[in-house]
Image (tube, rainbow, N blue to C red; front, side, top):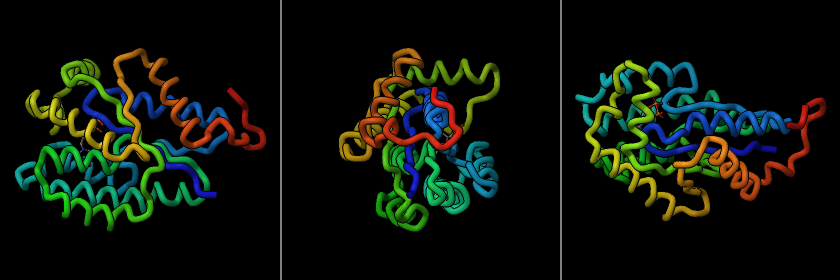
Length: 222
Ligand code: TYD
C-alpha cells in the first residue's frame, strides 16, 4: 500500500524541522517506515540546486528563474526520493514543499500563478501531500529564533528579506490553510516543542489514522 505523504510549512524559525523530526521519530517508534526529507534538496541533484538558490546566486535572475530552479530541484526530489519511498509503502515527511513556492515565489515574488500551476503539474503530478501542517508564528519571533539557531553564521537568501516580507509570508500561509482545509491544518506554533508535537500527532492520527497502523514485525512500540 502506498505510504502517506506529510509536509510541514511555515515562515523562518517556526519549528518545522524540529516538528518534522519529532513526527518521524514517533512514526518509526510505531514501526512505520518513514523517510524524513526537506526542500530545497533531499536528493543528489536537488542538493546541488539548493546551494545555488540559498547562496543567493540565482537572485539577480529574478523570481521566475528562482521558481524554475525550485521546480527543477523538486522534480529530482520527487523522482528519486519521495515517489519511490511512497511506492514501497514508507511514509514521507518533508520539511517544505509546493506551498513554499506558492508563497515565496508566488505571493512574494509575484510569479504568475499559472506558471506555478504548470510547474506543479510537471514536477509533482499525482504526488500531492496527503496532509500539510502549517506552523503559524509572528514573524519577529520566528526570525529571532532563526538568528539564534545560526549562532553567528550569515542569514540565507530569504532570511535577509525585510520584516514586511516575513509578515506577508505569514498571511499567505494563513490564506493557503483557509483555502485548502482538506489538505492543510494550521497550528499556532508559540507553545513548547512537546505541546506542538502532541498537537501534530493528534492531527496525523485523526486525519491519516497513524495510531491504527499495525507495527511491523520486530518493531518496538514507544
Ligand atoms: P532552509 O535553510 O531549508 O531553512 P528553513 O526551511 O528553516 O527556512 O531554507 C530554505 C529557504 O528556501 C527558505 O527561506 C524558503 C525558501 N524556499 C522558497 O523560496 N521556495 C521553495 O519552493 C522552497 C522549498 C523553499
